Length: 390
Image 1 (cartoon, helix red, strand yellow):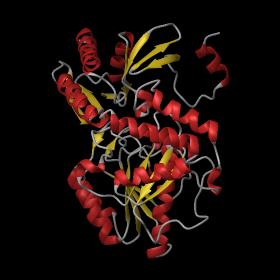
Image 2 (cartoon, one colour):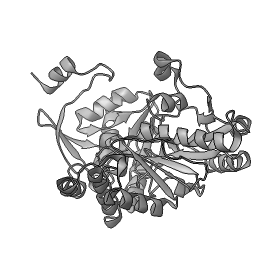
Image 3 (cartoon, helix red, strand yellow):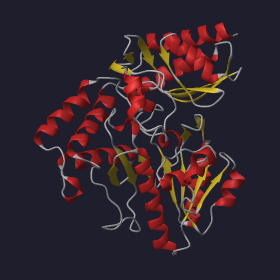
């Protein structure tokens, strides 16, 4: 039996049908179980920062696991403390909490906002404002902050106190934030929602309103963080400083980790308020530290900016491409014909993997190690598929 047949027999049916079984990866390339090679412009959904099989996090994980692999949150460990120090220094935030995924990081951030709200404003100050098009995860609190009834309806009733407003609508933002608001949760660039860029003016107004109403401004950087947009964190491109950010995907190049970084809040978590068994385990933290070092040593943030500009510029010149949006190596290709799913299939047949993030747009989020030849190959493949469809 094939991998796909075996998976169909034993895995739950919560995912759509999967077109490939991948068995090997190297850099920006992956191979399926039939031996076909693909240029990977998905990177495990913006996870494989350093490319497939990079030795740095693998070696760090193995070395640390052989010494001390897991201690729970009952004790300190050097790798977790060192990782917190590094992330706080990079972000200019003062406190870190580690967990296992982006959804868990957002769940923790929502709880942090409500802890702060209750402390400074009492039990009615618990509202969470997020945006239409947002995706913050599938746990119950993160799901309540997420946009899209199809994702939420089967699991209602969800936690209350959540409100979504149109992105980049300043009037709606001013109407939504008030004395009962505990937090505002924003992806600086919406990933699952279609790679929609949030205006700097909107982010700045959110900062001003949160200050006025003593609410926490939280940026969901689960997808945009760790160099993806051409900066360590997307908020650094806007000049708007949040009270907290959430991280996950690119932080450890495929190892399971999430994080919340926050300013030092006297109204924040107290002992017993929140926790996790696996978060910040020594082995995973060591892998994350190695990932951060490789991103810096190899100038992958600069590469994300340079290759992102090359990719965006080349795609804009392709007939059938209506627009390209995003930043760095987090891009969406809006198609004139609106046939994203068909184009995705056509690209896969030509050995290029992308993600149809909407009916009309493809998402391109390759490893940050992608080079000019691979970028040009991707552009040529999009051109060929759109020409064939036309």
